[in-house]
Structure formats: structure tokens, C-alpha cells
Length: 243
Image 1 (cartoon, rainbow, N blue to C red):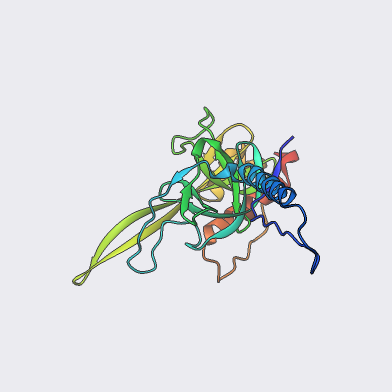
Image 2 (tube, rainbow, N blue to C red):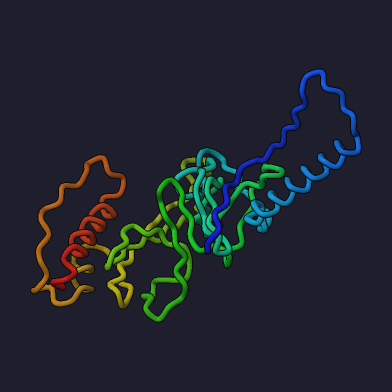
């Protein structure tokens, strides 16, 4: 059975009745020792997640950073060594595929052990580890992929950032360029998803496929391609019995 841990600080309070004399200092000392042992035992269990190593942080020149979404801690969840942990401070360095947490002892950033991570969630974005498989396309490698849609058909996003330095006038600017690749799993193989044509081709005879109704794309969307792919996968997944 998978265990669930909440990573929270533990504090022990010893309350004595007002004006009550302490009659047995030996009993008091043994109580303190017992409480400390209980505390460290609980902390050792919860700090099992901290068996990683120090993380070499990037020092920004402006507001650039290598992380997914934000460079501030996000309280998320993670399955680590098959145990589920809730309320964990997390960052995902997508330039190096490193999952970072905060050392609860000294506050330092710590890189979690890659091979011990099954999946994690940051701001309702779920990342799962896909292992090398013959069903991979030539563009896929083992790593963490965001699961955008989970049905009989599945849609994954591979998030990557690459460090770049560009000269503007007489100024050198440092940036992290983010690029996303999308992959459809049709139940047998993975296919690079670039639009409607790539999806319908992966699903079989295009002449027999139902036609999705027109999609209205939010003009304020920051990723219209991703919105379109999710819409198409949801539509075709609801018609998998006819595919």
C-alpha cells in the first residue's frame, strides 16, 4: 500500500499547570528524551524525500530562469520511491530535467534523485516519467512529460528550455528559450503531434474519422497549438469506439 506523507514541521509543546511544582526531574528528563526520539523518528520518515544532493542554482541577470512556470517555490505533490508526498515545495528545472525541493533543515535547494521519481504535480500540471520504449518515436527520449490528456488516447508535452546569450547593441542578454513538443499515444505507439493531420494519420483511415466541429481558440491564449491539440484529442477520444 502506498504511504502518504505530509511534509510539515513538527513542534512539541510541554504544558505544566500554573504553579504546579516539578516533583520528579528524572521523569521530566525521560519525557523530554522520549519526545525528542518521537520527533526525530517522525522527521526521518518525512525527510526520506530529502535523500538527494545539493543543487547548483542559476544566478539570473534579470528575470530569466530555467524553471517551469515560475522560479518561486510551488507547493505540489510527488511520488518518490513509490510513496506519495503532499504539500512539498517544488521547482522543475526544465533545462536539465531536475526536480528540486527545499531542504527543510537549512532551506537550501536540493535535487531529488531522478531514478526515484515516478511523477509529480506543480500548479495542477502533472508530469509523469516515460521510460525508454520501442513504441517511442525517434524524437522521444526517457524523461518527464506533462500529461495533458489521459484517456484511451493520451497527449503528452515535453517541456524544454535552452540557455542562450544574445547581443543587443552593446549589451549581452542571457535568456532561456522554451520549446514544447507534443506526442500522441494511440494505445500502441507514440506519434509526434503537430496538428490535425498528424493526429488523424495516427488514428487510421482518415476517411472514416468523424469531423470535429469548429473550435474557437481563446485569443488571449499563450499557446494556441496546445489548446488545439487538446481539443482534437478530447474529441477523437470520445469517438474511440468508431475509430
